[in-house]
Image 1: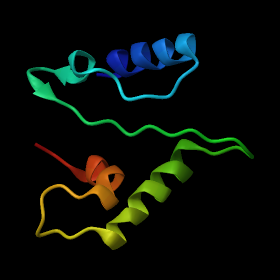
Image 2 (image 1 turned 90 degrees about the horizontal axis):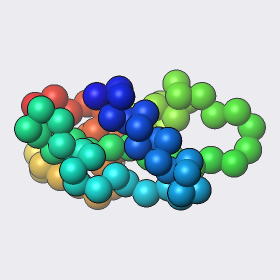
Image 3 (image 1 turned 90 degrees about the vertical axis):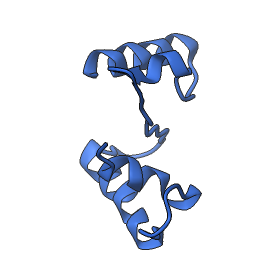
Image 4 (image 1 turned 45 degrees about the vertical axis):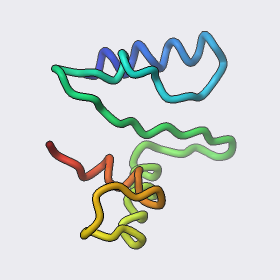
Length: 81
């Protein structure tokens, strides 16, 4: 999984774009995967800090509903199949 993510990150660098990977790239062991992407200009933003920002979406998440546009990053962090 790490290799797939790294390969896609390298593709994005070549294209100088930020976009979700096409479906074939997100298929892993027979399952479709979601992905969190971020673009940031400014002082250093660590992976830890970005993860905390995404996790704060839990405040808007309704645990009685499956998929919600306002908390997709959060659900991607905590989802387990």
